[in-house]
Image 1 (cartoon, protein in one colour):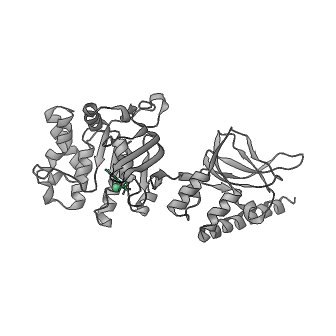
Image 2 (image 1 turned 135 degrees about the vertical axis):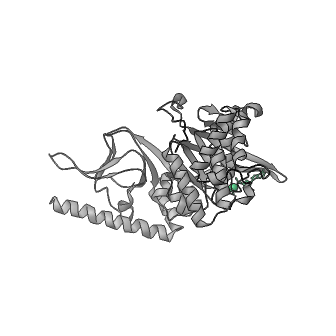
Image 3 (image 1 turned 60 degrees about the vertical axis):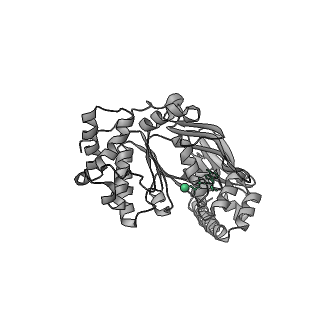
Length: 381
Ligand code: ADP
Ligand code: MG
């Protein structure tokens, strides 16, 4: 494949070490006849270069509004939106269009190709608009992009002569015209049958492998699971992704409730998080780094029983079995750790609303208790 993409060097786009996408405390109010509608509430979202992220949530939850903040199609009422080192919230209209053309490729649900010009010309248009590449290079590059999406044979047809899946692949080729580091797609497979959706998804996977950062909104939770990370949005708020990963049986609004109840704790590498024998009152979800569950032995070195990474939980065993801690937990020496803490009373309130979650957590607790007992048995405590 001849097409060349810009390869970001490590740190090149990282102004002040900022992630390539960085939303800080973003609020969006829409003015409506019945007053302001709060469509995004204190949204924070960080995406690193090279990540493939899906955004999911019910219809009307704010997914498109969120994408519009990143693309600069719309502006936050307050908060900051940084994309590839640029404060999008502060760009004026004139600079916005040019900036967007070079930095972002945007793919829409309904393709939105211009119907009166050829497929090839549709792909050349963003290069013309941003005056990228020389005229002859533009045509050559557009052909290479069409080869990438396996539609070179259709270059001189009008878009309407193509199937929906083919049109969407043209739209992706167009999004790549100016070699933007970030591609944003709002329900790109929403209008495609599942086989065609699969080929479009495969194309996104290829682009991620080539170094692009990709964000897709999707209704398809099976597709979402195949991206690196999923951000769930409920009622204009982002659900903590580790809470969602750890307790997947909660509904989106229950997950949001859990997110609001959660307190984030930071621990230095090697620091003790909780000690064996103390009273248990908190359920924990690991959100950054690794924790070690350790069995202290008198006059001997500790035994590390298990290591838990992001999305894994501890403290659930003691919740169900009303016990003091049966092991100590500490941050691994490898680096600092962040855990999400939810008090037992608040966990109870959540579980009262979700029998299936109570059952899932109880089973996990029973399994862990069995493990804990067997460790002790083996070590003849
Ligand atoms: P999603 O993409 O998740 O379906 P949207 O971001 O399009 O949701 O919309 C979120 C909420 O904001 C919805 O309740 C929608 O009706 C409302 N909304 C979106 N755009 C506007 C607008 N321009 N004016 C008023 N309300 C809007
Ligand atoms: Mg939408």
